[in-house]
Length: 205
Image (cartoon, rainbow, N blue to C red; front, side):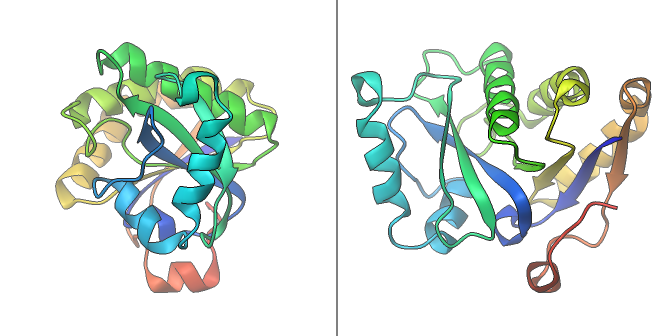
């Protein structure tokens, strides 16, 4: 059975063996001081931006198309890969774009035979895209796509604020039937991401 774990904390501190973290980025693949970008800059090591620039130079036009995904090494992060998706730089940041981003990362993660995927909010934090709209899109796309994936079985949705975590818990309670119909187990982790999580590793229960 596939699983979704909802948790609060810094996703870059979560060891995901055989997994990846999604980095909501921009078409130029430049790390910024907003959202999870800031944590990636701090913890992935001094060569992470250089790695992204190298991969960008290989792309047609020197940019990542909006909604597309690109995999790189994760530097010093305790995961196998970073999956970057281009959001900022698109003409419109809307539900259609966020849906495309999620579809891209799910497809790429499965192609890479990853088993776990850490997902932060895509859009909120780096743009004015509403958190509530992201949750709606995430829920719909994940319910449709996760059961068909061959390798990806665990998706960890990590948020940073108390208000976001509370909203997600309420949303999961109200829309849990959507996932049950697709045989997806939804777990709320009240422990959060802590240094003990970092030391011990994380396996969704």
